[in-house]
Image (cartoon, rainbow, N blue to C red; front, side, top):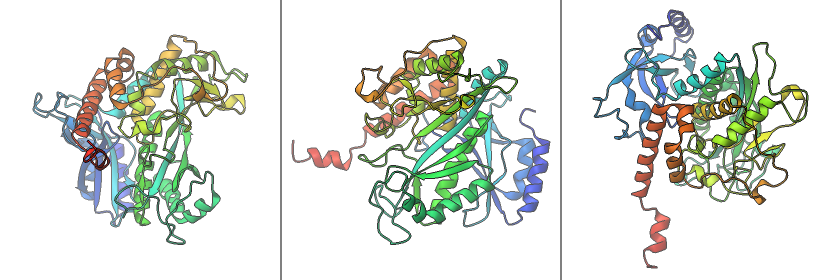
Length: 455
């Protein structure tokens, strides 16, 4: 049967024997919002999951951000809320070094009952995009950069953390501040230790622009599914270790209106069957394949914006003058553009895609990047001229400026349907429209204070 993995069962039994202290294992798939959904099982039941799978409703992957069924999905009442079968991804079981009680974690993906990969599973969506590259004898090499904020878990609203040295709240924005790295060194050390234990290639950490904000790069891998897996596990590590240190961590795109937002930048190069980087032609410009990939990314960017900015809060980050993109533009060594071609030796020629927020689902982000790049390559598209100087001050093709517009454009897009497939397109649109309606029914405190007496 599809998904059966007797060798995985043996690895799980070996892992359990090496971790006798583990009493339970969380079995989890990833929903459209990049949130883990699943079950907690006794450790003794882990091994049989590799040959029997576990059953969960298909609808679980299409719920909204609050975990509420999306009634327009067609997966709830119309189908009788039918089950799918979840199978291990081949990654795990994994430890949770930060947990108060030793526990395991097993990432999974979902198939329909007949064994067909479920097209609403974001991991399956990315796998289908990668199949196009495989058939062409090409292998994407991907790295991600994830930004996040440490926040005070006791504060009612997002607030910078208190210094473990002084107890005073971190108040200043200091990009690349060594002092902030040293202040939170114990937290960062434990993040790197946990990443090593989970085989997540966490590299250098930097202090980002915002108070309590950091960025940690994940090393490049020639397996985009693995890169997305790594990004999700990294989020799990950061949140778990932060809690261990009496802190909280958030990957919100914009926790503070007037401070730096958090992005999920993607670096992409492309290898042929002989391991050569096809973006490199020995020049500073890069190859025709690179330029076609850039063109595909720019063409699709407005229509696939929802993959990179999937939440109400996402659009607070995308403002001119913030080093977050405001237009569909590209340039060489230009951080004011959505697509940046970094400098360096030609053999390392790559694309940096800077649009996504840290709140986006890594599987759908990589599907959007790789799917759009593939369309550009397949059609031998040619991009407009690169942007020089400040992109915010130039007349450039705009991106959707609000959440509802991004949803509507994505819903009507044949290009988006070609990239993620009709099922994921339909489910994501239904999910986001339900979330928009839920927010529309809530009156914020600020809104009430503004209008209550004034009008």
